[in-house]
Every structure is written in structure tokens, then in C-alpha cells.
Length: 472
Image 1 (cartoon, rainbow, N blue to C red):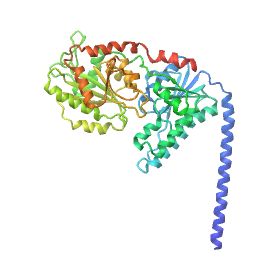
Image 2 (image 1 turned 60 degrees about the vertical axis):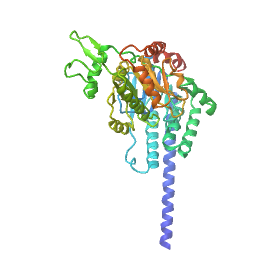
Image 3 (image 1 turned 135 degrees about the horizontal axis):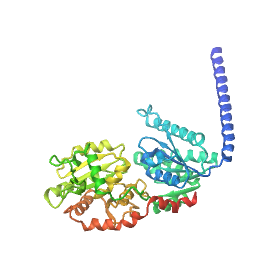
Image 4 (image 1 turned 180 degrees about the vertical axis):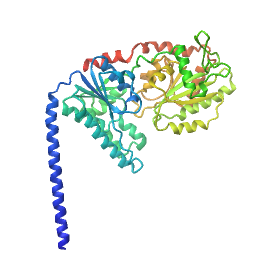
């Protein structure tokens, strides 16, 4: 008993010493941060802005556009996010842009309990983001961050802004908790906590932008957040492609995708174009109808809808000679890509070829400017955001068939600049109507392209100068 008593006393003393040590350490760290914060607040952050995206910088076009516009107006830009895809060349080459690549969370716990991995991931993200914002970069006049993801981004950015005396600006692309609900369900505890987290720190921001009028109304009604609508607009690189650009891209793609390749009888040709002896390019009369769809291969896009539509088209084209052969290109990276690629391999389609590609941003823009029709399967987890892929397609003068959802009519106006569909059969009928007798002129497609010209005239940079620059 005496030995047990001694052990308990020793254990208690050790706990006391440990608690005291932690208290001293915490107090010391708090004092250092407090003193540093006083110094940071004395710094002049004018002329510098931080842009934060807790995701792949190269796959975050809207945040890259923010950074580019800031850079062009003479601001120094601190761009924080994850590596992976290559950012826009102008950002990488600019002396006014510092890119901070955060370290990825360890995958050590990924194969274990999901809740433990999630906790470790959030803790790692919180520490690395806070350290970068507070200690690795100079004070900025404001920090522009996107949501989603909201957890832990909004909390960490708010803390850093309070410490350094910077303004916190949120660019609402969607609601993070609704994306979480796709995997966990609306009633899950994590989803409810994430929703309250997003509402709380969203309300504490100094300024907010959002992507639709519907989201602006929802933010104000449900969370009391005042925001300004900043619609996505295309950058200057999205435009109709020249025949020479088309031919060069098709030749490049044909090296990995045989369906784009040159015929044996004429190696200077592709499935769509021919290079003449004088080096001029013309479109082939028997070229396929080219459809493009871009995706992040996530749960908020059901590609079985597109596969159903293409199967329906294939069946119709097998019986109707006025319907041309069709090539459908699906671009992007994401978790469900392999799943759908395996399904595509099982399809036996004689009139339709389906290709999955990952292209550079420059090649992607040229492909959009070369296609005949775009397809969007985005249905929005919240029903309040708009797919940026359609903005890029419209900027390239490419008409779109888009899945119908709550606020899509803020971008796609049915039978004016595109068509809206509800299921795969509906989409199949629309594709047949737009592709019939191709490559002869299709009055509907031409009308859509003509109606897109006013949209093409207003680009991101000019739009940003009107709506964002005055408030910086």
C-alpha cells in the first residue's frame, strides 16, 4: 500500500509539473505572439494583399484571377495554397507574386479510422496555414480567402487577420457544409457543426463576395451576411481558336488519343483538320461533331447522365445518316475519374468515341475554342453556385447544354445561349437536334453563338476593376 501511495504521489507531482510547464510554455508563447502582434499592427500592409485557397492553386481559376488582377494593378500578392497543378504562367513569372505551397497532410492515418484522419488533417492544415499567414509573410492590407473549404480556413484566416490588423475578405464560391453533406448526409453531426462554423466566421468577415444573386439572398436571409455579387467572367485566353491553333492541338492530342489522329493516307491531317501544301489549314467535311465536358470528377456531377445521353445518340445515329459521328472529350482530374473510365471501357459505341484527358490551361482554352458544343453536368450541392466551366465555354463562344438546377438561369438562358436538360434522355435529344446534318450550318447553334457575343465582350479583369478594386 505504501508503494502504491508513493506511486500516486509521484504521478500527481509529475502531472503538476507537466501542467505547470505547459502553462509556462503557453504563457510564454502567448506573450511572444502578443508582442509580435503589436509590432505587426505597426507595419504598413498597404499595397500587399494575401490570397488564400486551401486547395490546389493551379485548379483554382477564380482565385488565380484575383491574384492576377491585383498584380496588374501594382499590388504585391502573397498567394497561399497547395501545389499540384501548375499555376498560370503570368503568376509564376511575376516578381510581384510570392507563392507559398503548404505541405500536404500526412497520409499515415488515411488508411485508418476516418474520424482520426479527418482530425489529423484539420490540425495539420490549421497549424501550417496559421504559421504561413502569421510568420512567413509580411503584413497585408487584406486577406482574400475562398470558401469552400470553410473548415478550418475561415477560422485560421480570421485569427491571422485579427493578429496582424488585416481585413478579412471572403469569396463565397459555394457552401462547404453542403459538399460535406454529399458524403455524410444532411443530418450528420459533422455537417451541422460545419454549418454553424461557416456561418459564425462568415459573419465576422469584414467583406464578402459571392457568385450569384441567389447566394446573396440566402446569405442575408439565413446568416445575416451582407455580400456583393461578383459573377465569374472569362479571362482573355478563352476565345474562338484559329484553324492553325486547332490543327496543332489536334495533332498534339492524337499522340495519346488515336481518335484524334491522322489517317494513314494523309499524315498531314487529323480527324478534324487537314494541313495543305501551302501550310494553310482547312476543316474536313467528314469531321466528327466535337463535344467537350469539363469536370472535377466529384459527387456533385453524375456522369451517368452524359453516358446515357451518348448511348441514346449512338443508337439514333446508327439508324439516321444525317447524324454525324461524335467525339466527346471529358477533361479534368478527380476522385471518381477512374470509376467512370472503367464504365466507359464497357461501352460498345460505334458512332461515339469518349476520351478522358488532362490538359494544360492553355491547351484547354484552345480546345474549348475548337469544339462544337459544351456540356455541363454540375448540379450544385447548395443550389446556389454556378459552374465556372460554362463561363469559360461562353467566353470561347461555345454554346452549352447544362443540367437544370435552382439558379442556373442566372447564366444559361434556355434556347437563347444554350439549352437546359433534366436527364440523360433529354440531353440526348438536344445533342441530336444540334448535331443533325453537321457540318452543314445549324441555325440554332449559330443563333446561340451570336447571342453569346455580349457576354464575351466583358472579361474578368475589367469586371474586377469595377466591382473589387474600389473597395481595396
